[in-house]
Picture (cartoon, one colour):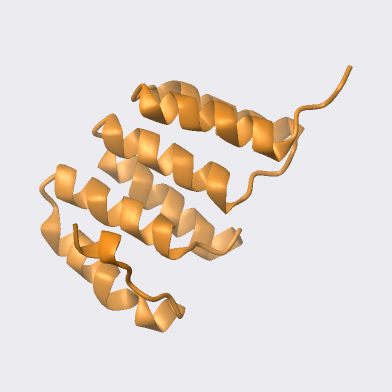
Length: 115
């Protein structure tokens, strides 16, 4: 059998994101962590976005925290997704805290950060 690539797995997670299938996205990410291939920041960002769309803002924040702890290193997109999730969950203080922390993490806000 041919093992799936990280690109194929990330594409499947992205499809879940588009359909707000956050539970399925989480399951795919868990499968990558358990069986491979190792997820990259794109895989995690797509899963975070699926959770944001599914109104599971806490899960997006938990995944961002896990990226800070154990990698892969979060990107500006990672933080943007978490900020959007906080906004959707009406937790603006948490989103503002993430924005304020970006320089400490050597991340530059983008135009999407403020949308």
